[in-house]
Image (cartoon, rainbow, N blue to C red; front, side, top):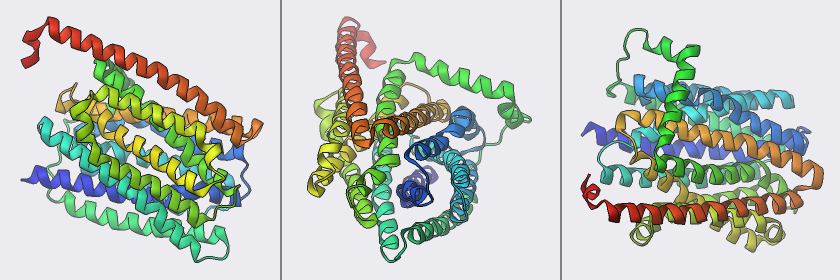
Length: 416
């Protein structure tokens, strides 16, 4: 069936897309540092990656519902190519900040479209596709930094290696665009109503899309999934922006840093094999809150582990596994709460919250790191996250008990 073909492409496309971004993202902060950017400047540059997505997240979801995932993937891949080429030819730190605006826009568009492609079908088909997509995504996140690290290894000057890594990522993006052009020929593109696109992109349409997205939060599972993914993405943004710079202070080479990040991606991929077993024993809410708490503890332990390579690998494996569980579980919790015709808006809302967390994280951490140093920033920031996740875990346990009590008192609703 064609729907199976499109789901498979969404899974494969997710792996390729995250391999491309994983190839470029870890070395961006190192490249910026080579160009003279301070810790504070790096924090605000990484923050700029999330600014535009906050504005376009909900209209993007509506556009996907109106014109289809493939057309939006094509638009996103063009923005990705522009971002990478701008990074290659950047001659100043402000130019790097501009490239991150394009990168942020492409990520929100492509990640939303890919997630919509794989979240179709009945619940069993959908959950299986979401889990497989998440595994491929983690696989891409594992392979990308490793390829980038191998490239930089062959250059005497680090900046030249980082720059050539961006060139290779741009070439891979061009290949991805060709695959999208092929898929576009057979994809059943929705036909928007006359004036629908203009209406979505108008000021009134944009504000309406955010109101409709906020309306989805009346569903408790949507609220729960958003809170859980917010914390994990906050931690992911923190590590993406500052872990390479922090490990560089301890004498880790670019290739070694890439290997550690790839190890994290592999942990995320392997974690998918235990999700079914976890789901048989625990509720999705408890799994999500436990993964967030474990990731928060990793932040506190980072300064203790960083001087020792073995402890760093162990820590990053734990963090990668926690994040790897979070993505599919949070998506499963949320998509069960709304109809398939609203999945575009739902994924737009989910990624809006993610980008908001990724805006706050590097900015706050950059300010904190420049004031007290990265070691103290990891300790203080991690302590706050652990306290937050303890509260979230308590809330999760309360809601699970409340749901069980409600189901017991209303047995007729079980078959609804």
